Amino acid sequence: MGQTLFSQEFSYSTGYLTAILNGCLFAPSLLTFWFVNGVLDFSTAVAIGAVGTPAGLQVRLLAYLLLVPTFLLARVITHLLHPTHRTQVLAGSCPSSPLMSLDWVSMGILATGLPLAIQNFGPWFGMNVIFLVGVFVLPRVLPAHLAGAFKLFAIVLGGTVFLYASYGGVVSMVPHPSRVLGPVATVTLSDDTTLWLSRLVNSIMFGPILVGAFGVIMNHVLTRPELTDIPFVRHTLPRRDPDLVVVTSAAFGTAFYLVVVAVATGELVFVP
Image 1 (cartoon, rainbow, N blue to C red):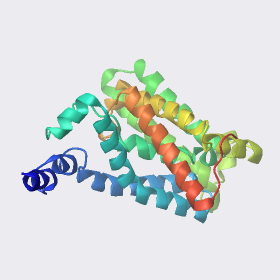
Image 2 (cartoon, one colour; image 1 turned 180 degrees about the vertical axis):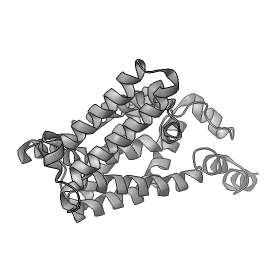
Image 3 (tube, rainbow, N blue to C red; image 1 turned 30 degrees about the vertical axis):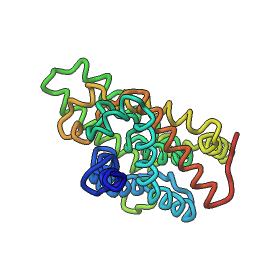
């Protein structure tokens, strides 16, 4: 009898272990998401200047290599600690509501580099002003049949202004951004301010809280109707997740990254 129970419990085809590994807690699609999202996040981080040194890029790579197994372990633990979810999982079904999101966990890692990215503050300010006016303000007074196309144009224009203001100075065939855009291309944060912001976001005391709050804001902004009704763009936007899932996942991602940094470098910032 004991051998039979042991075989049922740990057999590949039956038992609780199969329910955990073959069910929704370990989805093979997460591996695809991990690879695609990792490529997008790394290219985005490099493009916006969120990675300051090759060593920083290596630490982020290490964090992404460890991200999926860490996320899966955390999700298994959280679901099994939740009484209702534990019953559902051990019965072989998926819990009806997620407790963590890999998308927001990975955002928590990327957001730790934003202070470095926004040191060139002018391009960010100019781009977001164009987004605000072109997506959320002017379309309210435009005819409905023109609003979608105008929003799409504003997004393209904002991205173009950001790229030109950030990198146009190295292209000799175009006028220097400072001559065309003025302060949008020239306003920067001081090194001291950037360092303080970076230490604030990368501190174990404040980083997870700030990044979690940032995730909640982005969760609401990116899922607003003004964006979700734009052709093409709506297919690239995330769905709106519960705020508790967002803040928990983003804070977990930040804390996880800071632990990886501490292990890799021997440095852990508690307070800025």
